[in-house]
Length: 389
Image (tube, rainbow, N blue to C red):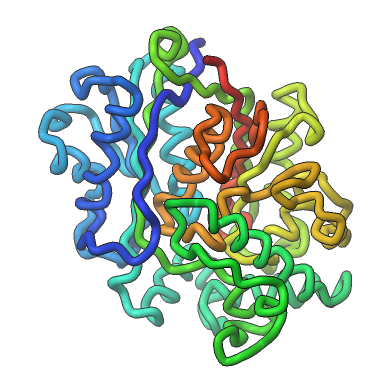
């Protein structure tokens, strides 16, 4: 079986975009990604689109929209994937399955979301579609309210870690300063992130505004090719391992202070790769809320349950630490346009491995981890990437 490899990409700025819809956003990255890979449109065998939508736009059938921006792709099979906040990774993995099954040699993956044109209250309700509405739809604060519950349970069990959450926020905002694609390029500092104020109020206690990722527009695209084709192109990033593990949707039926699906995905990917965390040069992880990043330290094995705060306190996850986490600024600073997020995270890691990350660059990056999750650690994707050319 031939393995799929990343051979090119394109990334639009995240933030409040003047582009009116996902059609325009996807058009801004699809053809540039092919150009970056050195691939002709006529060589594309499949198009895989990641857009959550769920009410952000009345226009659905999003898989068909890529060809609207480039008619040369009109007759290429296209499909749209959705898996909550892991929609982008779902599109990537499905494209990889397409190539590795022998059905095609080259695939275009495009992730996008247009969120800022929707009223904030409506955004909150749309995102609750990624929760178990039967039990969780009445939570105050939307999805922030769900993660506030997780934080409350975690604090009750292990102690108040609000300061460490502020340290995570400050770290990621500082890192985001170096990311030209980031929605929020501002270094707020620890004191601001740690203080409840008019500019940093509680969104859902104990989570403050600086503990929550941004409502963003954006798009990202990458090109995948089989190993033989990748060897003939300028860039090639291989998946040394990849794992997708789900968990129960209902938070009431699992321990929400332990991301068990994420733990299993990390353990499986590291085993498949014959690697340990010590082999990783960096990790891009899903910090939709700072409490998520804290628990993810424990899920990936950087700390024992309840001791994720040590990772922050000891500086392990800093850009110059033992294992830099979110050198891109993460979702916290880069933004979180749902369908584009997983694609963006893989691009950020690929840029590091190619030495093309600019001021974000981790020196001599060799093996990068990506963790993208859908819902409250329900759909969990771990990719371990390495450069092959």
